[in-house]
Length: 295
Image 1 (cartoon, rainbow, N blue to C red):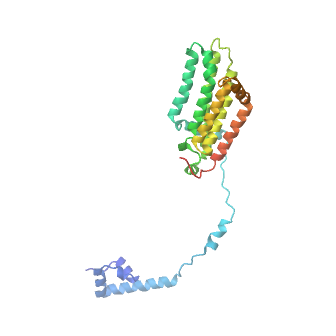
Image 2: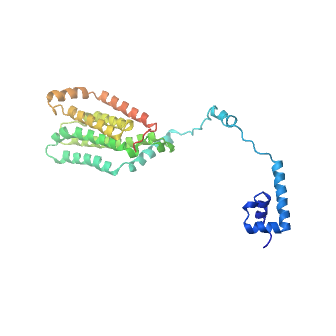
Image 3: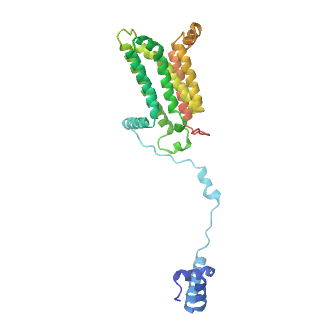
C-alpha cells in the first residue's frame, strides 16, 4: 500500500496508534519512512506540550462570585414621546380585536342588537326598557369580562413574560377594547330608547341606571378570574348581576327585599369605586406569573 497520510501519521505520533486500522498499523511497522515521520510528529507534539503549560481553571469564588454582588448595569430606556406612545397603545388595543373569540362578539353585540330591535319594534317599548335594558346590559358586560379572562388568555402565564410588551399591558388593552365596545353598545341602545316618541325617558338616567352595576360586575369578574380562576370570576360576576337585577327592579323579590337592596346599590359612586379597586387589584395580580397557571 502507499505511505500513510498526514492524519494517520499525526495519530501515530500523538500516541494514538491503537486507533489506527490494522492495515495502517502493519504498514507503519514495516515502513521505515513512515515510522520516521510518525516519530517526528511525536517529538513535535512533546515540544508543544512542554512549551504550553496546562491551563489553570480559576476557582468559582474568584471568577463568578465578585459579579454576584456587583450592582446591575442600568438598562437604557428608549425615549418615547406622547405621540408614539399613543400610536403604540392604539396598535396594541386594535390588535386585540382579532384575539377576542368571535362567539363573544356574536353573543354580546348580537344581544344588544336584539334588545335594540325589541325597543324599536315592540308596541310597549317603555315596558321593555324598564324590564330588560338594565339586566341585559349588566349581564352582557359581565359576560365580556369573563371571556377576556379565560384560561387561554391568562396574563399570568410565565411564557408571556418573555415578550417585549408586558402581559398586563396586553391584558388591559384587551379588557379596554371589549368593555369599551360593550359599554358603547349599551349606551347606544339607551340613547335609542330615550329618542323614541313618547318614551318619557332621558338618555343620561337610562345609562346611569346600569353603568355602575355593569362596571362592578366586570371588575369583580376580572379580579376573581385573575386571582384564582375564571370559575370564581364567573361566580362573582353572577352574584353581582343578580344583586344588580334586584336593585334595578326594586319589586323583583318583593317590595321590602327589593327596596333594601336598591337602597344599598343605588350609590353609584361607591359601586364605581369598588369596581375601580377590583380592576386595579386584578391588574396588580396580573403583573406576576402564576405559580400554578390554569391555562
